[in-house]
Amino acid sequence: MTAGIDPVVPPVDAEAASAAEGSPTGAAGALDVSVGRVRREQLHQLIRSKAFIVGSVILLWWIVCAIFGPLFAPYNATAANIVSTQLAPAAAHWFGTNDVGEDVLSRVIVGARDILEIAPLATLLGTVLGTTIGLAQGYLRGAFDMLVGRIVDAALSLPIVIVAFLFVVAVGPSTLTLIVVIGFVFSLIIARTVRTAVLQERELDYLAAARLRDESVLHVMYIEILPNVLGPILVEFTVRLGYAIFTIATLSFLGFGVQLPTPDWGADIAINSNYLAAGYWWETLFPALAIASLIIAINLIGDSIEAVLVQ
Amino acid sequence: MLLYVLKRIGLALITLVLLSMIIFFAGQVLPGNAGRAILGPFASQQAVITLDHKLGVDRSLIVQYWSWATRILHGNLGTSYQQQAPVSSFIFPYIGRSLKLAAFAFVIVVPLSILGGIIAALNRGNVVDRVLSTTSLSLSTVPEFVSGVVLIVLFALGLKVLPVSANAPPGSSFLIQLKYLILPAIPLVFILFGYIARMARAGTVEALDSDYVRTATLKGLPRWVVIRRHVLRNSLLPTITVIATQTGYLIGGLVVVEKLFVYPGIGTLIITAATDKDFPTLEAGVLFIGIVYLAATLIADILYTVLNPRIRLGSAE
Image (cartoon, rainbow over all chains, first blue to last red; front, side):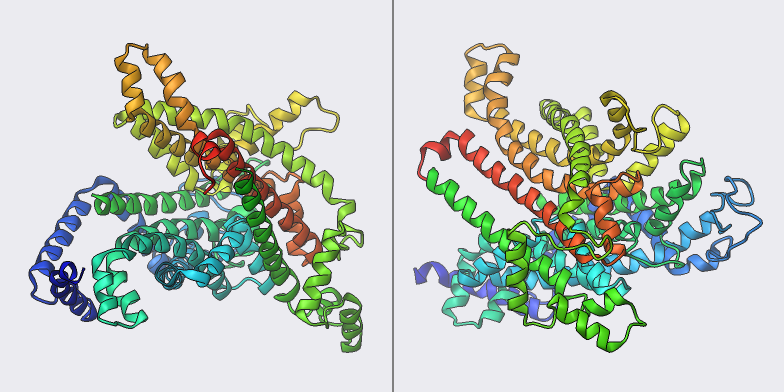
């Protein structure tokens, strides 16, 4: 058995060393050069993908809105104007005005900010936490795995929006609450994916080698296994980012996300949909299209990353 | 087989207990001072302490959970802070209306998505497949209220063929009531269509690639007979699991759809309870959703076992 493992050890060490340096192409081992080439080819393939380009352009537009929105929005997004309420889309107000006379286009532009701040942070928290839990579950197995698995099942036995809703209501809505609650809930789902990926790695020789070298559990988890399961984690991150936006928009719509008067697509839809029956469709439709375009953009990006990685 | 089913039921019960703990924690512990929440910021500290004692929230967590859980097991869902009446006295009509909307969406989505998945699989790789797969996946990732708004603007305000509200005038016939439920049901259908169709597609593709289908084709059976007798029987098995799993999400999506369409179901009840910090009503509503979901998953597991001869006849897992 040892004879089978010995030849594997040197490249694994080289890879581990390069991972420790923080750069996959850092060390000059033969294996690392080929890994670098694969990565570069994947990147080229990604940039050539039409879905990736379309998604990136839309996402970039909303990021620009989130950062610089107030600078180029035609009006002040929170300036009420009682003489120009419920105006239909026209030259002066491309997307019309709402019930208090705010410019809908400006609110749509500026409304990108909160959701694009909360969603990536929540997803990042969920990914870091979920990766840790999943690595531990998959590598340690045993009672810990069982216990966490049950808790995950219980938490996921409710729709995510409802779990998040329950906790946000209990703690009170704020940006931090949203990030923490969504991050925690997502970490459970991400843990499940990471665990599955780790279970597939578990029986491979390089882990047997690491065990024989008597490496610490943390070393094995983060230095040996983690680099090899980064692909599924990256895919999971983009998928979750889409769902984070879904969840935050939904919570805002339900009145427990971003709070007024901060311009927010979900919250605006909740308020303005009361006027739908009266025929004032623009103040509801445009924020809705904004949410849809952002989510679809992220899905396009996620799908193209997955397509490249799976090959 | 019996052992397997019993094991599944046991696991579901454990999950239910954990779920109840999560709900208890979120509803009873996290909000902190219940007495203060009810009496408001201007009540005296003495009144808050008295009410806290009366509500029992000054006891240890384990004691509180135990009395909370046993009370619910006895069918006592608590007293609504807001309505000053037992939750069980008013919750059932809301549940009934939600189930009506959910059942309507379910009846539409199941045949439609299975058909969509099979069509996509039979056209694997060509334009029909790509259009079907991309559209359905995009639709399933857009929140229900977003697609709902687009639908209202298109069909209720633009074409004026369907009503904006979900509430039929009192005394309407069954068909008229259904007409009012079409628009609210479609966003729910959108969300589920993608998942179920994808599963049906994957199952069908797998069956199409199998040796027994090749054998059936080679022995000269007409394509339609091959599909009906050999492909579908095997391909729909995993789909059943997904359908049952998605039932839970269907109930969850109701919360959003009911708010948009101002439909008085369990979702509206939960949102109102949340806004009013009426935790007993909120807990009962969420617990109901959780139980529906768990039951659906359990039924899916058992159905899968019953329908799959490999599990039914072989050794239990």
